Image (tube, rainbow, N blue to C red; front, side):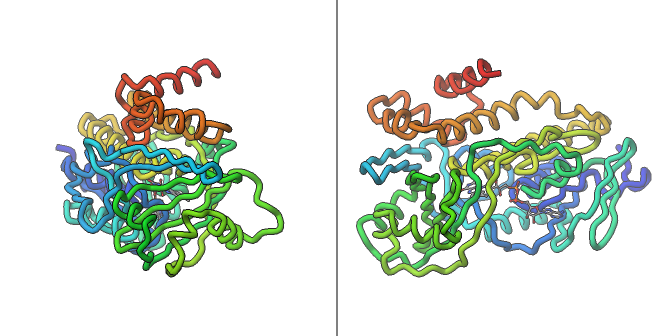
Length: 401
Ligand SMILES: Cc1cc2nc3c(=O)[nH]c(=O)nc-3n(C[C@H](O)[C@H](O)[C@H](O)COP(=O)(O)OP(=O)(O)OC[C@H]3O[C@@H](n4cnc5c(N)ncnc54)[C@H](O)[C@@H]3O)c2cc1C
């Protein structure tokens, strides 16, 4: 049995970032019997955008012992809408596995507290300032202390600690540029509102400069945001831009008539990227730190869960076999990671190419097989080998290379 103290280590693994990816990786490693420290610079519950979840997250949540049906809005599907021609296309998602729309503050706190309950040392309000991944161990310096561990997991989200350090972040062009969003409560009764809260679906109206999300949350609240892909009209402040598009949408006008805004309007840059050094000497990245995609298909937290689970299982094996200093420890996992990330990436890229919503999504109304294939991708069913749409997306990429 490897003795950490005798070998000068405080922990087997230090995980930086206490969002969904970090809490997942830390918890699974603790379940494997590893001594883990999870460091989060904020204090939970902290605000985070990204409320719409995918059903294929459920297997990882089961491993964590989390029941996400408690207190969250059930999500039956996704509805893509073109209000200019009055078309709507509903994709049922919660068929075998179930999904929920979650408020990220309490949800991320639950995951973080669950990690602590299962044996992870958790520190909040501790900011990691510097890490050195060396052949004989990892040194971590925070604003409060220093630690030495056998391995480092970077789950810092879009702060991308290791990606920025190694200058390995590569932008993906032509997807969303920024998002401007807010939250409403006390949504008054109306036919539209009853249908929305009954189905719990995410609504995605497409607009000339991008798309809008309408996410129903428990307690008759709504998360509403505009993702802008094209250049913003020069004469318009961000907040005015959001209001202009909310007013122009008949659905939102009906839903928000008499509702109260209860959060400030927030703006976030929304550039998609890959991290070309997702792993290396004694470290691996997961979640947004490994790569970030425009949120049109709500894939972020799902990819955070699944990439964190893969990284955690592989790190545990590496530590068990004494291979943790192998920079290629995660190379065997590349294909699976890329299959998931690239499928979503290609799907998102197709979304922004003109006509996909009409040519593919609305076409699916007449083609049940195509509708099923789209619904599987939108659910996060990315690692099966029998989805013709996924195969054609990936084949198109191979031809382009
Ligand atoms: C506009 C927008 C809308 C989105 N909508 C959705 C959606 O509907 N559904 C969805 O699934 N995803 C959505 N996403 C994406 C989703 O928010 C992310 O993919 C998800 O939060 C990734 O989880 P994570 O754990 O990797 O990172 P995060 O959740 O960002 O967690 C990273 C954590 O690391 C901490 N941290 C960073 N640096 C340090 C440091 N140096 N020291 C200590 N701690 C540190 C941060 O404080 C943070 O808590 C959206 C994203 C955007 C921008």
